[in-house]
Amino acid sequence: MQFEYEIEGGDFSSAGKASSDIKKILKQLNIDPQIVRKIAVALYEAEVNVVAHAYKGVMRVDLDAQRIKILLEDEGPGIENIERAMQEGFSTASEEVRQMGFGAGMGLPNIKRNTDEMYLTSLPGKGTTLEMTVKF
Amino acid sequence: MEKPTLENLTEDLGFACLSGKTWLSRTPQSAYVSDLLSDVMGKARNGMIWVTSQVHKNIVAVASLKELSAIVIVNERPIEKELLEQAEREEVVVLASNLPAFETVGKLYNYLDGRC
Image 1 (tube, each protein chain N blue to C red):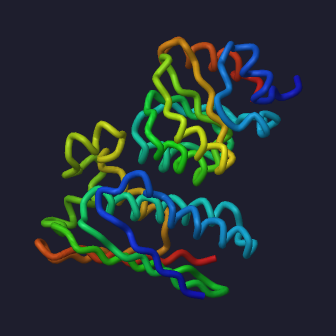
Image 2 (cartoon, rainbow over the protein chains, first blue to last red):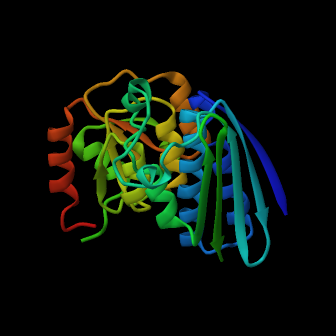
């Protein structure tokens, strides 16, 4: 099964829609609830990253009996230093975004902890691509 | 001792239930306090009560995705109708405390400690 969601940069009121949609689908498929919750965390953090940092992005979800694969491609400023971005506590989020309780520098570490595979690549000035896989 | 439900807790601690009255039969599993959404995403466990002073709509998505039993908003923060409507749709219980976070959490801790 494949699903595709468009994510609009800056649109915080819609953040989480794709994640909650996928979560519902996984629940209907009777995937282990603990794994569903892990996927929900990773999806939400990834979605919020696009909303908080990029201009727009697409989330593509590929689902089969063994695993879920999620690909997020965004157009945005990209990430200068991925190693630093992966460090807990590091964030380039704006003051406005931080006041909402985002931008604590925990999003990417949360994604890493809740997925089996995670690949992050970026072209500064162009955008970022995040690929993650969770096995069932 | 029987585990308290959200309904017991709401009444005993003097919180107001603003959304999700249908789900007050949930029995909370401890609580987590944070105003950082990723902190809650990363560290809170399902069934927990989440104490926060954040009042924007994203808290509903976090509570729903993490399957938290309720959100307790502290300090009489103004809460928009839209947030409560979304909470209702996503089966999220929103409670309001008229006390600041410290006192709210103190009451909750005494109430839940040893009971869940």
